[in-house]
Length: 348
Image (cartoon, rainbow, N blue to C red):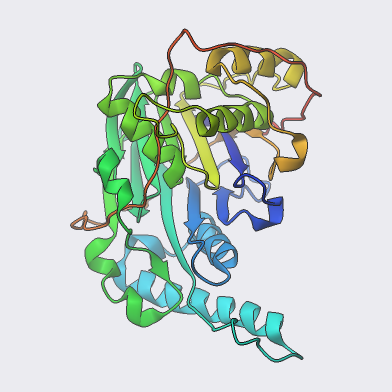
């Protein structure tokens, strides 16, 4: 099995890259030609909590490097979260070392949502994967331009609620085994998977409910700057009810496609890719490169044998924060400004 992925993230408007509380972790290859499985994840740190950026990074890194099945077993996961919380506490203690906290710097636990994907290839006849979500970061599987699986199963109006989040306070994690969503699935060559944090996820759910094929638009995004242009446009454009198509929040997306044979990765330069991308998304104005957190990546990775077994699905009692939707009407104004080329890494 071969896969190709691209990962994008942009921060809120008028914030610095280092203030982006989302994180993402495409799987580490460690220089190997064949892997037991492929792991990737996105996480959205809660803006109302302390050091949530650090917490979301710890979560995605843990998921991407997990070799013990911690995220597939409730007891192991609770132990892993406790260990990560200790690491997070060391970070926060280090920040305040040598000075007193100000009166407004009351210590609060970190919170974050997560969506992760494990693609397995233990048997050529059993093309399996496991998706794991907690909170309002979401997963979608696309086949023949149709959504055939999504997790968690929710609705656009649910993004107006406060989601259950993974926390650095272990007392608040006691219900994780009941609330975590683990769903096994199967893939076919040509399938595409998406992992998204809540602002982009809400956009997609709104579009699904309004019969708008937003994945046709997302599929054209090949560069970081075209993703930023798409997000800028969705934030600036309003629906008929005068609500923005996308709320102003950190936005992160990973796109993965699976194939039986190696697939050539198109050069993802701005000159070749972004002009078409921006026309496709009808972006009114591209984002400045200064607002880009991470360069786009596209990797081609062979996947070898593995034996990860999915846990049984748990009841989904998570809810979500408020978000917006997206408009993919062909009548939107189109622009195709030239931008500097971006490098895309390709690995086989």
